[in-house]
Image (cartoon, rainbow, N blue to C red; front, side, top):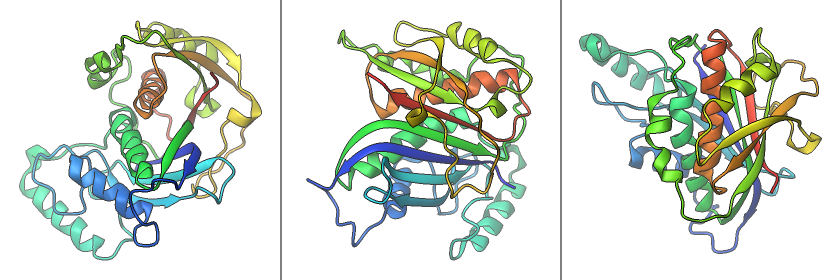
Length: 280
C-alpha cells in the first residue's frame, strides 16, 4: 500500500459569493487544478527530478451534508502509486516508472507527511474558497501506511518548517488559541508528556505549545468513514497551542510540526491522526 494522507476541513462554507458553479465543477477538479498550477502535484508526466509533493486520489465537497465537515481530500505520498483508480492512470504510472528507471539519480522515497502538509492544507483551503466564503474551525489529517521515517534521532525538524517561520511574524497583537488532539498510535511507546515536552522545545515567538489538556468531545479525533483503516479510539489528551493568527497556513504548520516531532520519536508508526481546532 502507498502512504496516504486524508485531510478534512471543518467549519462553515457559505455559497454566497461563490466564484464557480458547483454544478459544473467539483472539489476534485478544482483542488487538482490548484495543485497543478502551483507545481505541488500533476496528472501529467512529471519531469525527472521534479519535486512533486503528492499524487491526487480523491476529493469531495461535504458542506451541507455533514454537520461541520465542509470538504476532504485524499492524496498519495508515494511516487507513481496514486490515482490508480482514475481513467488512464495506469498508463501514467508506467510512463513515470520507465522515465525514472532511466534516470535513477532522480528516484526518491515517499514524501514525508510534514513536507506535504503546508501546501496540501493551503491547496484545500484555496479550493474550498472557490465554492463560497470559508469560515474554518479546524483540520484533521489521517495518515495511513506510512513508511518508517528516515530522520529519527536527528533532533532537527524538516527544514522548510522553520525556514518559512518569518511568514508568521505578524505585527498584529491578536492571537488565537487552539487545541491539538492526537491518537495514541502516534506516540508509540512514548507518553503524551514526552511528546509535549519535545513540542515545547520547538516553541517560537509565533507558536507556543503546552500545556497538556483534555480534548473536548467535539474536538476529538473521529476516523472518517472514507478511510480504510479502523482502530479503537479512547478518550485522549491533547495539547493547547497559542497561535499568531488563525489561518489555514497556521493550522498546517501546527499539524506538520506535531507529526514531524512524533515521527522523530517513533519512526515506525504507520497510521496516525492529528486534529487542530480553534477554541478562541
